[in-house]
Image (spheres, rainbow, N blue to C red):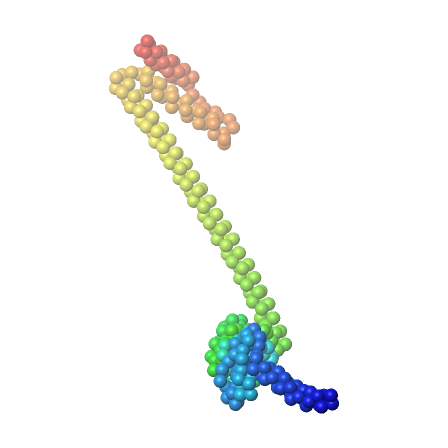
Length: 313
C-alpha cells in the first residue's frame, strides 16, 4: 500500500505540471478581441499582422499581442492657450477634436503616444491659424477657423493611421479691456443704425407728403382745366345763340319788320336793368327812363308774340 501511494504521489506532480502548462499554452494561443478594438501581433518583437474583433489564435511562445488599439471615434480635449492675433490682440482659445484610428498598425508603430501627438499638433495649428487673422475676423469666422484646422490636422495625421473628423473652437475669449471696447463699439453701431432708420423714416414721410401734395395739385389743375373747358363751351354756346338772334333780327330788319327791332331793344334794355339791380354794390338805383318808351317796347313784344302765335295756328 505504501508503495502504491508513493507511486500515485510521484505521478501526480508531473500531471499537475502538465495540466498547468496546457492551461498556460491555451491562454497564450486563444485570444478574444472585443468589438471596437484591433490588436497587433508581434513575432519576436516584429509586427506581423492585426487581429480584428472576434476569437483569434496565436502561435504560442512565438507570437504575442503588441498593442491594443481603440478603433472607435474618440474625443480629444485640447487644452486652452493664449494666442496672439495678427493685430497683436491676446485671446484665449479653447478647442476640441474628434478622431478615429483607421490603421491600427500605423497608430501603434508610427507615433509614440498618439493622443499627446494629436493634442500638440492641434495646439500648434490653432496658434498658426488664429495668428494669421485679425481679432474681429477670428471672432466672427469660427466656421472658417474650424475648416482650416480640420484640413491641416487631418493631413498631418494621415501617416499615423488616424482620420480627424472634426475640430471645433469651443471658446475665444479676448481680454476684459477688449470686451469693453467691443461693447462700446456695438452700442455705437446700434445707435448709428437707429439714427439711420429714423432718418430713413423722415425721408419716406417727406417723400410721401410731397407726392401727396403733387397729386393734389395735379387733381386741382385738372379740375380747373375741366371748369375752364366747360366755361369756354358755355360761352361758345352763348355766343352762338347771340349770333343766331342777331342774325334773325338783322333778317327781320331787312324785311322791314319794326316789331322785331323793338323786341330786340326791349330785351337788351331789360337785361341791363336786371344786371344793375343784381349788383351787390348797389343799394338804391335811380334810373331816368321814359315809361311810354318802355311800355311801347313791351307792347311790341306782345304784338310779336301774337304774330308768332297766329302764324303757328
